[in-house]
Length: 323
Image (cartoon, rainbow, N blue to C red; front, side, top):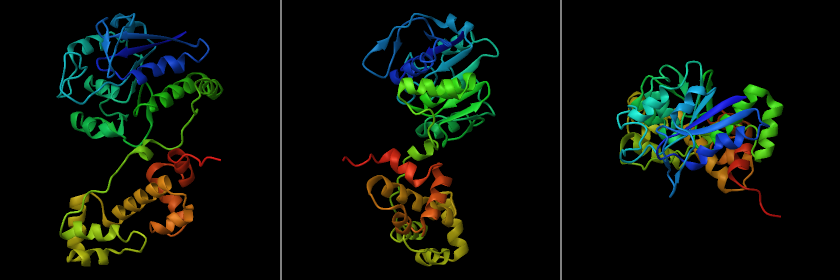
């Protein structure tokens, strides 16, 4: 029987802590799931309770797969924080990880990736974490290749997932990888979850439009946002900013990190997402409202940006009307 050991660290999120037991436990005795703590004691959670686990870090030595659930990474450091503010491992965490045998499959859910990165296990590897923490992960661990758009990354012996429910996606992926799609689908049915979700976490990222400022490219961006339903050219943007085309393009990229054309596409996609979430407008009408012209063009751009079609996105974020 494949032994999965879940390492519960300080300020763990209770929901994600329970995901491995729930998913692997539904696989008809193909897995043994054990939960342990770094020091053998109770574990503080982000809720108003602590959890008592039966096993200490010695359980890690016999694991086939080790899973590190997420923990609260924001806020001041405390004695139970698994990593230090500068990205180092807390002593108890380091001592626990040292018990893991070479060749063990390592899995993190959400901010659990910070522990793997602090241990040096993610250097040069593709990884993901919750989209709100990707910039922090890059900043603390510049050698890690962070992908903020996917639900999970399978890099062979190390796998990482995005936030919360993406831990379900990753655990189902592991069941599928170990035992095939039929078993994974059976597990998904037992747990009443989809066996596979389309797209990635890009569809869940909220990218609010920044507040406009006065003058230059910012003024042109504000002007363009009022005209997303119309064709907007570089020459028009530059004229609105009262700049030459070359100067405008250079200043625009310096302020936004994007070319004017890519920025316009991004804003049109964001506007389309809001309309798909908040209205019942047909897809072709939304395409016209945001300046893509046709439903086919909107489908192409939305799929390129977040990996799903307009219909799939609407089903995800707008419940069907009653009756």
